[in-house]
Length: 267
Image (tube, rainbow, N blue to C red; front, side, top):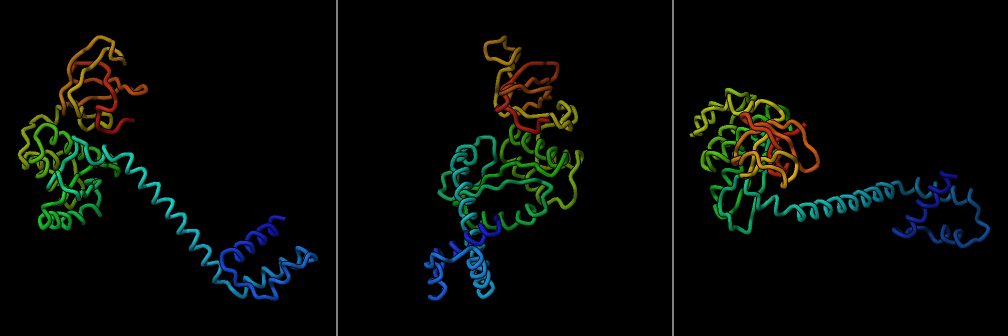
């Protein structure tokens, strides 16, 4: 029954989409005495004579699916426009008022990202009316997360000029990055941070960075007792998260902070 149904559906698609059946074949369709066996034979013969129809049907289906995917991606990008284009915690280069914006999502251990880096930099030098935004997206493991933590910390504490130098050093580095190499590049870029080793165990996976000046609370509500004011760029260790809040520790302080004010990987 399933096979017969498949044949019927296929045959219907051929007629509605292509309308290329011969007149003698069409006459059979109007014959009320046509049984399922005759129809199966007819469809099979038609497919064997015209196998390219199958490929054409698949191509049309794929185009429709691709079109749907593109539409979904466009809607998603539109819904995240503010986070992508107006994020104050992401490095921006070039004309910030430009109508043309390039947004690059990078991982400092991504070979493709590094191969494209020089091309993008040359393009930006020739086209200084373009805005370029860098989004830290460490997806290739612990070393990538560590490198991005260094970069974000430098951006928040040292500013965009030092970040740009540090970013360029990492994007042109040919080998795997580690803690000592990152420290060396930070110093070379002009970072004033001298205590990376003591910055709340930056090597830990659950260390995050405060991206705004925010209050640390005793409990996971703004109506609880304030513990301290956490400065932008401070490193925190996440102990646990519940709903929109995370319990953190930092240099002897413990308390709760709103999750959206943190940057980093949380297990």
